[in-house]
Length: 464
Image (cartoon, rainbow, N blue to C red; front, side, top):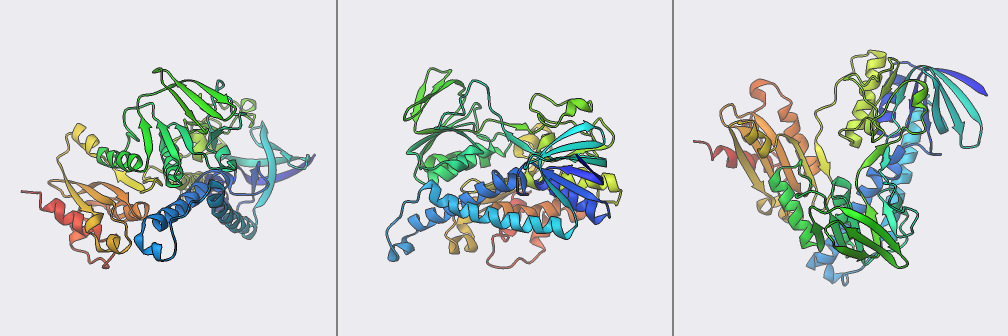
């Protein structure tokens, strides 16, 4: 067994692992990264964010082609299979792996591919994919092993028609009808993708509202557009059992309903990838979902071991994970790059997409904050009309007296891009954080960003 010494060993090469490794390497530390795949990128690149968003983009293009009358000069509406659109995702994954492999090489970061576990607080043993066992000794270790879909014991995931959000990428056909169990972010995104391909989708939600953490108006808009695209949303339902049959799946609900479909996609929660790390050898406990508790510096209960990304829970977003990993390394190298990551916009890549930051109307009302609302509907925006993207709106919540921007909520074309303008203003101090910024600033015309100016005028006109 070979032994190698490092300043920092990072377990996982997803966004959190990459963020930690790069920051530590830039600070002059000798760094190694371990991943249980033969390629870098983590779940984000291979099974999560990248493939699902690439799928969404392809499906959205298909929908535009099939619904825009201008394209009838080219040909009639076409049907595309799920494997067809998956090919575009595979191309993006390959490009991402190439880019990220180059990052590690340029920064002289050693990469090991295999299963890692703690022998003690400063020693990680790696059973490499070729069977060789390596021992990595490090002053500090960052756990960034990500998460995987939660699989309850009473669901038979070996059945060929029962999938989770990882295995759905191996789907070799396009079902006529699909049950999606779980209406969180992942469930709603896949409901958009499959319904865009003409699949009849039953979306099972165990709550009474889709994505209840969103502004209620945005959540209602999402529900409307999913239903308008033949997604049947069933609220307040829980499964009793899931029966795999020869030609499909039967979902038995506790309400007494039975739903049959060609396939079922399980999207109900995730579990941290910690079960093979040997954390019991170093005294680190995990919660019921396999997640590790950390302090605001991303340090675990063992002083030289840090954790970041999905493995620590909220917010379980690739963008936040990257910053958390970078911050964990910042705590280690003490180069001024640490920050507690809590300024995180929500980005949901349904069709249309959703993004928000700050408080919702419900939260402000409960806190008795005197606020006002400014809205810009995309159907009246020149850029949206040019792009044939009339669905959606930008909504700004601001304090009636100080005019401070308290929340930005966007639904529709380029929502995940538009929200960052509001985020930048909300991060300013004092009078610089004011809805008047959007009035006193000239925006390019025509742009989607101009919606801020329209919404600001709308909001200020409501004051008296």
